[in-house]
Image (tube, rainbow, N blue to C red):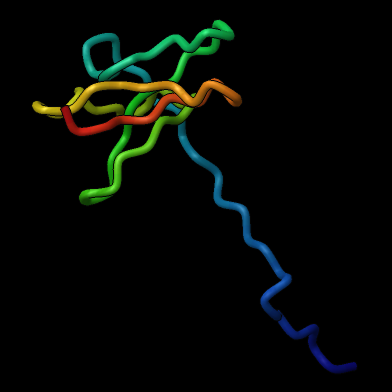
Length: 78
């Protein structure tokens, strides 16, 4: 029998290890719906996640705004 081909529809899920240390949680934002989000970065791409591991502090010159419809936080240059 031929082996299964892995195409673009095949997704590989990677497990993340949750490591929370009390001092290294980074910037935390609680939105209008009461959900907590933590700021992360990959290079110059900033994003909020519900996972507190590896969070970063809010960069200087930025402020947090919230999408009125979804309640998702975003950062914006001041």
